[in-house]
Amino acid sequence: MNSQGLWKERYILYIQEMQKYLRYIFNGHLVFVMVMVLGGLAYYYSDWVKTLDSDFPAELIMAVVLGILVTRSPINTFLKEPDTVFLLPLETKLKSYFKNSLILSWFMQGFLLLIMLVVFIPMYAKVTGASGKDFGFILIALLVMKYLNLSMRWLVLKYQDVSVSLWDSLIRFVLNGVLLYFVCSKANILYVLVTLILMIGLYLYYRNATRNLVLKWDRLVELENKRMTAFYRIANMFTDVPHLKGKVTRRKWMDGLLAFIPYGEKSTYNYLYARTLLRSNDYVGLCVRLTVIGSFILVVFTNIWAHLIVTFLFLFMTALQLLPVWKVHEWKVWVSLYPLPAKMREVAVIKFISYFLLFEALIFSLTLLVKGEWMSTLAVLALGFIFILGFKGYATKKIKNF
Image (cartoon, rainbow, N blue to C red):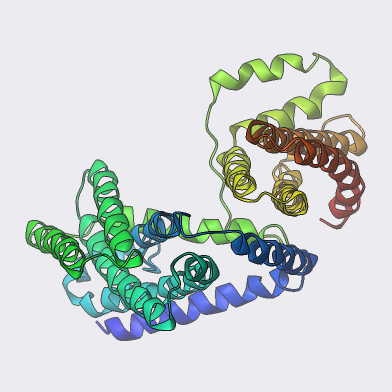
């Protein structure tokens, strides 16, 4: 068994798979919009940093955000479902395979940590007067912590009980957050060392406790599928992705929302796509996540133009990722047999996506209203209605190209 050769083969296939879809993503108009929006956010972020003083909790914010990124440590195993049968007997010969996976995951996630640290540099330097040496020390601490977290995550995956992973993530988040706070606030080195020793002790405990445990192959394959599915969802906005498999959940508590759809032939597609959007984890979860993240960012910024840019960005991302719902029933014969005009299906899809966008715009407006930003509230609400009107024309053209 040549585990090095197997890993290299899987890695090459992974790179080829990513390149195949990335060329569609980066050829799209989304890149242009993202560059413009991020450029605007960077401009207002720099203006916002100038207003900060030494009392601003920059160290705490960095500890929480970077602590989440360090704690979240998925591992690129490149495992496939047949591996649970064909590679299971060779588990003891795959140590170098999984070691390469850990190293690759460390490099990729370390690069993400570097990007986030660069984003925090202006804020942290303005509040604390930190130098390049301080940032170098923080980066080294982040990379060491990330490797420890990846190693612990790998060991915890050997436990049969999934709840162990939840408790492990909580414990590691607390340790990571405390350690990063001590590092960023330039606390006594003794505090840093004690926290680091606790983290190393946790790793040694996991290593001894799992010494006689074997890998849970089904769990590893499931996690790998989830990781790739997240990428495929993004790629699906630009081209058809045959690998994408959505999950459907019965949400009985949402049935009341369907009561507003009148019974009759004209409501056939309305009912179909309402059920599709509400029951699919891909769409409900997506809308909730983007709405929560967007609301949090709106709370941070105080400039009305920044609020408008953030609102436009998140409405655009939500609309673009909801549009593929048009293709969900494309290959179902019984949908094509409906004795109804195709235009009714198009109208139903655009209408319910517009409802999602309206919901998101209202939440954004309510967030700013609670914050006391009256002008921003009205501006965001107006932008939401204008965006939805423009989206209807854009969606009509986009659907025809699907």
